[in-house]
Each structure stands twice: as structure tokens, then as C-alpha cells.
Amino acid sequence: MLRTLQQIIAAQPASDGAGVRIQRVAHHGVMNPFLMLDEIHSDAAEDYLAGFPEHPHRGFETITYMKAGRMRHRDHMGNEGVIEPGGVQWMAAGRGVIHSEMPEQESGLMHGFQIWLNLPAAEKMMSAAYRDIPAREMGQDQRGRVRVIAGHVEIQGESLTGPLPTRSTQPVLCDVELEAHQSVELVFAPEQPAWVYVYQGELAGLQRGQFGSFTRGSVLSLVAGGTAAGALVLSGRPIDEPIVQYGPFVMNTREEIEQAIRDFRHGQLV
Image (cartoon, rainbow, N blue to C red; front, top):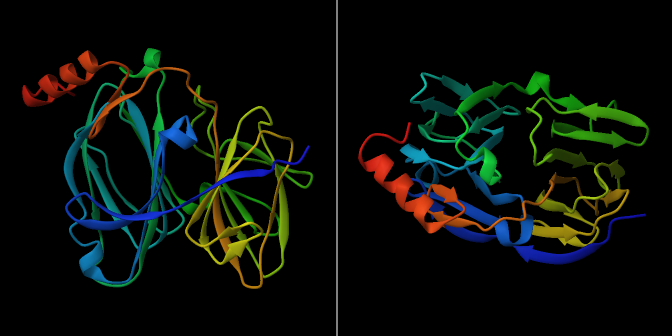
């Protein structure tokens, strides 16, 4: 059964970090178990140079995926590395992380995505963890149309698995690039919803800067329009639990948020 497009949302301009201009694509209300999808796309240095100075997180995971440009990560655990084009930084904040993400360039195109993935209540206070994944470790189909970052995907008979750790939320994350009028069919977790964000060109039913929500089903069919197209494909197992968010903290109750704030103020978050 083909997945069908059921909702379209347009990305909205916003600002985050120390004044980085972004496109806020979607939030947890429409992409459970994901909490947020943001896109950075600019060749104007003033839009991104301020970066994301040191800040805390608790209760979820972050995925940073770079298409162009370079971003340096540092955290309280001693991890440090530069995310190159095609690479991914995965971080489980769990009980607590203090980190920064700063541009490793002073000019040129910066294009990337930040994705927040929720953790179920039983895992929110897990130990923090970090992994830097270079482009060469991504699963890629033989025709070079699909790069699998997380999860297990079948692409017209070819089976690929992404390098991100297996999670209870069973996330799927793919980057799809198609030539004009080219098509591809993806098969993954038919019991889970799927979402598509078009970052270049257009797909049948979706324009650049639009986020589409698709029904559950066996096959996700994507068809490019008259020019080359690029899109992120996401899926995951929804978490049926309350969400309470305060800035960089995402928990299940107000009391847990208040505890996170106290822990951060008293130097006990990590």
C-alpha cells in the first residue's frame, strides 16, 4: 500500500543560538517522536557566524547533519570534532549535556539540519553519549540517490542500514537526491508515519521549503519535478507520553523541568 500525502506545512523563518538564521520546519505536534527539525541554509556569514555557544540539554537526542560547510562540536565529556559535508553528529543528551556547535568557517555556504529526537520517560535520565559519523559511513544505494543515516530501508530490492545507533523510537532518516523527473520508492517500517522535507527543487505534491506528512503504508514513492530535487525523509515510532519543554530541556512533567533548571543552576546537570 502506497503512503499518501495528508498534510503540508511551510517552513518558517526563525532565529536560534546566538542569532543564527534558520528555517523552522516542524515540531513535535506533527512529527512525534521527533521534537524539532531546523534548516540552516545561507552563504551570508552574518546569518550563521554567531553559532550555538555553550548551552545545556536534557531529555532527548540531537542529530546534526551537514550538507555544506563545517561545524565544530565540543561538549563537557571531552568530545570535540568538526562535522564535514555529508557527516552527522549524534548526541544523546540523556541526563545532561553541555555543548557548543560553532561554524568552522568565516565565509561560504552553510547548509545543514538539526533534528531533535525525543526519549521515552524510562530513558530520559540515561547517561549522555556522543558519536561523530563521517560521510563515508552512510549507507548509500547503488545509483547514489539515497543516503541512509538512520534505520533500515529497502530501495527497490536493495537493503541499506544507517550507521546511527539503534534506538527504542526506531528512527529512520534518509537524504534523497533525484535528477529531474527521476523517481524512487522507499520501504521502511510500514506501521510508522513518515515525513518528507524538500530542501531543493520540488517533488510531486511538495515544493522547496515544504514539509509533508504521509500516512502509514508499505511504500513511499518520491518523484522529482522538472529540476533536480533534494529531500529529507524521516520516520519513527511515536511516544505516547506527555511532553513538557522549557528551552533546551524536554521532560514529561513540570516538576522534572524545574529539577533540570535547578540542576543546571547548581552545576549538577551533568
